[in-house]
Image 1: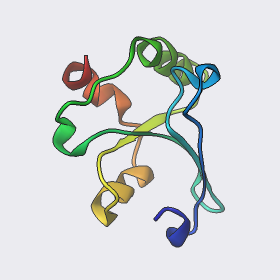
Image 2: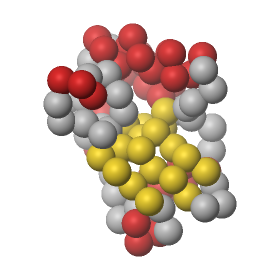
Image 3: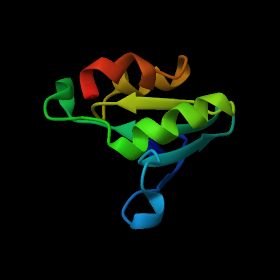
Image 4: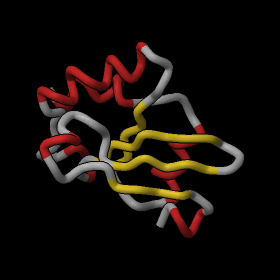
Length: 94
């Protein structure tokens, strides 16, 4: 659905080399780039992996945010226009 909204999106997960990285890298010609972590709706059964808890703070330290989305909906996609939100889910996903 991101591509329907004008984003270039590429899945980044799926092998040992991508351990700890967000699920999707997306880029928009006006908004810029976003690292997106996909979690289950209402965060039921979702958690950060140990590798994500290691890498997400490094992303932040070096100026790259991570956005958590929990559904393929317009409401969730609006989060991409706000500040990175991964840190707000720390207590939920540990």
